[in-house]
Length: 88
Image (cartoon, rainbow, N blue to C red; front, side, top):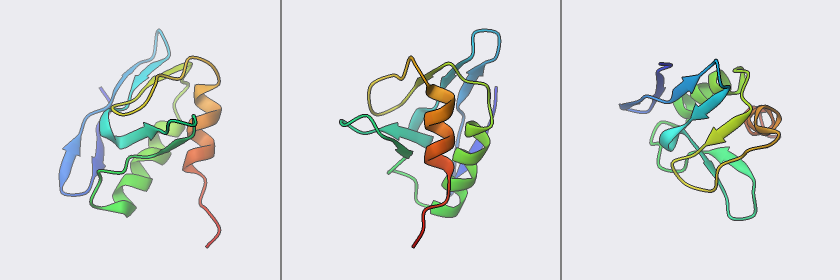
């Protein structure tokens, strides 16, 4: 199990490396239009962004989110894109 810190509470995403499946819990979400984003219920945004970065480094084929539809194609690329810093 891979632990990720997101603010004052600990979230525990579950990664099954043999099957390349990631259950993100509230750490990552998927919007109705299909975008993968940092979870919106995290209080500590810096910790949440760091957790997203760690999850994006995994070899993920399927990502299941606490909020939003699962991603069954291109999951690793979508997680990496969501983890990239945005220009302010």
